[in-house]
Length: 326
Image 1 (cartoon, rainbow, N blue to C red):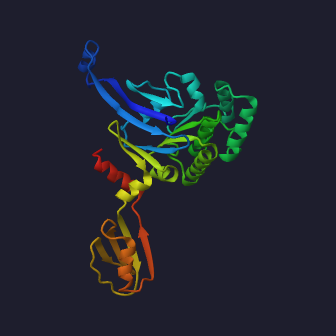
Image 2: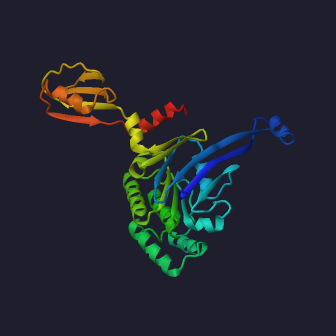
Image 3: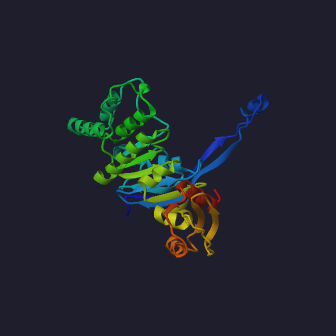
């Protein structure tokens, strides 16, 4: 059995319909109408210990619902989830000591007190020994560069500073699993890089299993080798990010610098445009490889310089969404 086993998890929410107007509001006191939203439907996947998984999908796809089920906050309507031999919502008291959770838009830090005071509260909540607390706190302060901000009230911190403190707070008890929901939302480039580097080291050194949800695809490409795509409450794709790129990243933009005239006809060349310094070509690598194209061109002209531009991961994800009509 894998470290995390999710089998046919489903969750439906019952929501009251709300209509505008005083008359409709009065009617709802006597006869309320409801609608049912299936947040996740028969979701199944497995994760090995030490993996970093990118869990992606559009808004409303069911990502947060899945994370809440995996972390024991929600009970599914049906299906089962076994994590390290435990069911999160049944063995919650024992289970929460194994997990850390960071929600980018929700804080676990007390707003009006310094982060270090929240750390002390968490020490008691998780029953961390004095030695482990001091060792873990020192390590996290150094790695996340918190020395100058840990004693400042949280409300006075910038978003980047607060997020670093949030991550430290979630790891104070040394969890085996870390759930990251939009951990770099709103952060500047420097703060993002610091957080990403820390997550990589954490995974490498402690084999912490990490499940990452993010709309920032650069987070996914920087951290995860495997992605799980969810849409309309169902798992649509589960596989290696490199395989995904090989399937969807087939269109390449190639800029060639040359003073000579290029006349070339070949399958796979979608467009050819003359520029001030040479030519811009768009090719389909399913029909012609880059090496094959360059070999043909080099026989005709002298290439002074070349630039090959890949599709961004954002474009690949958009194509994936289009394929699955989500």
